[in-house]
Image (cartoon, helix red, strand yellow):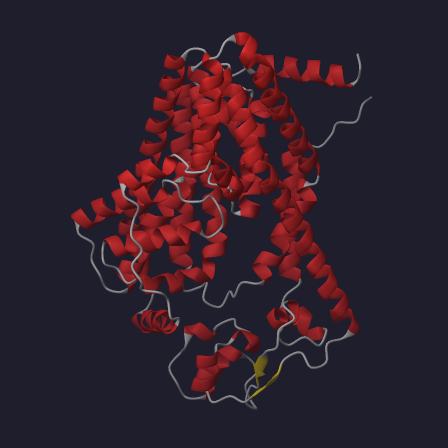
Length: 512
């Protein structure tokens, strides 16, 4: 009896869980036992200093009591090396050079840590390496077979309509949740004042960031140099370039177009095969991507931002498991369970990498091979979605804007909230699908309603974790729209048809 192979998404989930467990087990206390009193400086091979706690003070969080001061929540759950220069000066602490006597085992741990980071970065680099080629080759190959330009326009219209609608809906949900839960008001006044002081001391840039105009966005779709767009991975320009080639091929005589179209089709298959090779290493790569993340974050301030974080995550879950399944069933007649099972590897990779662009090749692979959507639809809809459709990030903009406004004691009018919706929608168009892009968008949104952008410094502490969560929703939204359009265009295989195709492919590989 043949042994049943474990599904890829379960392998990735195991790698993800092991990465989280690794972080929980390997904390500051573990480093301290190895003679490392400043893990961050040790890992980065940089000099650093560590404050000396006064006699009678066992933990950083006891400093305020020892000094006879009011409770300082910014000291909670912090190790000495995590104290800021301002905190060290405020409590008049002496310092010593960090990591004076690390053990030999600490040196080995340093190499292991670097090796783990390298493996994760190599995997991401591999995905980034094939992102532009897979968009170029697959989109040209798919478009060149569309002789019916009216169908192409119909698919494009549906795609843009759903993308814009879901983005507006996501921003609105974020605003409503933040308005109801009011996360900024859950923080005590004294603590809120310290958070504002911390933001002011961060030196956050208050320089104006002009939101992109509609005219500039339209103009930027067409690259001045298509090869520069390819080299710089300007995805919307790459999509335009690919569509232009594909449409031109579709209008050429068959004898002229056939060899060119065959080249792009063959290269598309080659890139997909590279994706398959990469995904075999995904479980290990996911562990290597997640393992360093949580250990590098300071958790002392997370308690004060817990309500804000819960508000964001709840909104993201509402979009992913409420709005999307409803659209799948109502507009696409697609079983949500089947949909989520098919895209699980892409979701887990999106969580690990925080990059919808890096996840794009895997998303295309999931939609075509695991869900049964046609390559034409997937290759057309997904690359555009990875560029202009960021529902998770848009929802985060709404919650973060209201939270920062509440923290600074500002009440948003109805007109300001409408401004937030349209500014966040416009800012999301063309923003790179890479880690941290949401912060750039947030700066634009805050400035549109005159909220201090230095408030971003407050939420940066936990932005990395929330970025991982919202990227999952970004990718899920792209996949949902693709599934709906594929179903409407009769380009989505049924479960029986997909099973039959897999059996044929397995037989072909076995040489039967």
